Image (spheres, rainbow, N blue to C red):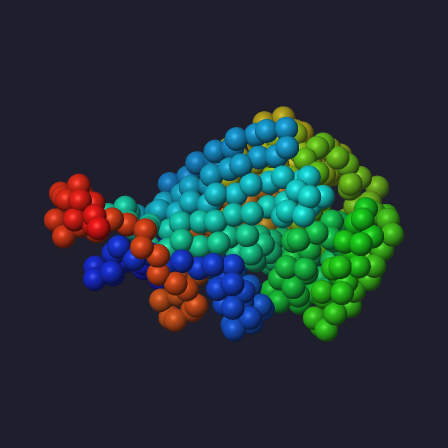
Amino acid sequence: MKPENKIAPSPSNLAMVPFVSVAHMMDLVNQRGLETVLRELADMIESDFKRWPEFDKTARVAAHSPDGVIELMPTADAENYGFKYVNGHPKNTKQGYQTVTAFGVLSSVANGYPILLSEMTVLTALRTAATSALVAKYLAPKGAKTMAMFGNGAQCEFQAMAFKTLLGIDTVRLYDIDPAATEKAAKNLQNSGLKVVKCTSGQEVVEGAEIITTCTADKQNATILTDNMVGAGVHINAIGGDCPGKTELHRDVLLRSEIFVEYPPQTWVEGEIQQLEKTHPITELWQVMRGEAVGRSDPRQITLFDSVGFAIEDFSALRYVHSCVTKGAAHELLDMLADPDDPRDLFGMVKRAQP
């Protein structure tokens, strides 16, 4: 399957690289509408998952420190190469910084020239939410209307809006160990079309929920969701586990669930399944989307999306932003690439630029 938007650099403007800043990204979202962006992103991600074998795939390269992690997430198809630089530092919020920041580059495989540089802090939140809701279309119980949200930080509202847009949920139940985070999320979701219920415990937040999303920040083996909190027929959207030594679910929850993952070599290291033996059965999502494997097969089945985020999702997001830029979305051009008149005379270009 060919990508929807074949991306090629313009031969007349190879030295100038489109740059999408945070301000540009916010403009894109607000001009197109959040729900439209989430829907279009999900479509782009789904189309790329359905051509999964065409991609060069590798687990992300991580540099861990006591305070967090910095990662590079690369992938490529026959036309383009993309990567994301992303960090994860849970202590940052106490110092006024974001827990996660990111930027990304999309390049032409044909000549190696970058064709897009973009902020990806906002874009990662959008693509993560779009991916979660896309996967739930295949795995969540039909007619699900209520989602429980453990962790009400930066990702919370994006998740709620994506599930409203793609699945039609009408109620989101919120819980965070920091009540201020819950208040923040509830305020942001006013006038969203969702009924928002603020909860004071993990046990309370799952009451009546057909979908449970876990998204906490601390990089540790925690147990925020225990076996007794998970009833039959629930879909679990576990998006908080994203590095070695960080989990959110009790092992017994995993043993009761049908588990679906993005890229097993990465998920075995970083996901909830790091708690299990490597022989435990898991299913790759791209196979479900291509009809080569079964998703939810029984109304009483517990399905678990063990999400750690994979580079193809970022590739799809960058491809989407580039398609918007080519149609006139806000951006600026950066003079990033040396462009001498004679490609062999880089030294001469520098010399001739002397005052």
